[in-house]
Image (cartoon, rainbow, N blue to C red):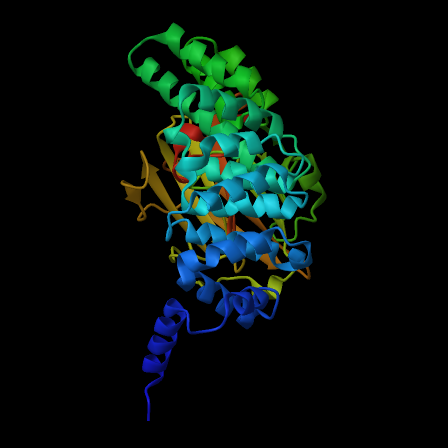
Length: 448
């Protein structure tokens, strides 16, 4: 019996020598089933330079409209296997002029996958395309080589990305926002270095430059607000934080709510409410709105801080979480997290995680995860409930205990909230960077 591996080897050699399927047969397969398409791609790539003439002709054949995107994919793959400038010329021509926007987008995508650094100017030109799909593919490609751009090219990308943040195409709009925030982050990094060197005028000018470019940048506005807040212009900084939804005024409740996880006690209507959250990401710094509908409530009495959470969930029977023991490691479950920094120290904070079973993990952290005091336990109570299309919880944190002082009117605490959804989305009230445990990025609670 002949081994199947040897059959595959001889078939590959045969294709390479030209004794396999004809090139036209292989091109025809690109219009067939998924299996036929895969076979056709392999045969054409193995044929290398012998396939170029037929592929270029097929790309211009109107009768092959259904397979033109696959033809682009094969031709782009051949650019790393053969030295034939006609391929590049043809692809760039179709990127500029093809009547089918999906073909133009495929060219941009494929060139971006293979050798994006060689096509920076064509990608920049493609940002003016009328198709959002083309702009999206070009932005993705440019994101891979942003550090290779010349100053003039950087300027073109900055201008185009700024304009595309309002594009109707979702992918183009989001990727443009990411590119814009990347530039903002560069200016912020330089500004913070200037602060460390006590060059305050320089720092302020860099923050201002970032916001002149991207007035709505969450990160830019937060850092400029903190610059003012921490350097003798508290009211100016506070106004900026408030304008961008990073301050929550905690209302004194007329009475304590009954804790049953339902959030139906009428007193919750008195509490402060937030329903706007942003996705955390480790690969970009943009503040992209969360996909899951979420709402939180905060209020207080003389005795305690009260927190309420409502999270829409189309499939609550799929909630991830089995932990039932106090201080269990529940970080890979569907949970909410609270980060509470009494005194707005930007350093020390209480971290609480609660799953849909009402299981609580709490710890006191000094400066971040490197100094995590799990042995510290809060005087607190949590109750959760799972509904037909949601889950909710209520949490009480007592004042006057170790690390948690009595909150009086006018007190300012750092705060952030996180909802972890299926391990796929990490929603935050105030966007942080390089992880959630960043007290220097927390929002502000002001007790009324």
